[in-house]
Image (cartoon, rainbow, N blue to C red; front, side, top):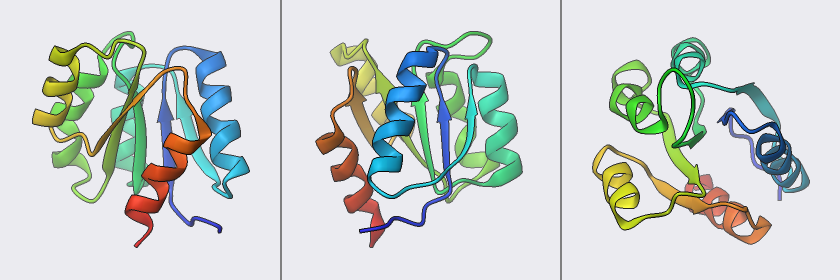
Length: 122
């Protein structure tokens, strides 16, 4: 199956961005933009209005949680998915309360990425 989402990846860890991009491409997705901090994530969300935004919690300048606080105003149709190695109950609850549509724990698995894509492909 090919997914026709406009996708943004925001993560300050290049290896994690590469891994996520690789899984998404393997699943038939095209990545529209990759950024390494929260400020650039918000700029690109406003500019390209992605359908899916994979956002790390721990990023410089603005955290993923700060991005979540602003993303609905900038692009109400964007579905933010948090990706983090910091999967504490507090982080998960905060992310979901701020509007995250999913929470993927690092290191990623292709199965979890595919579940997210299938959930929102309809």
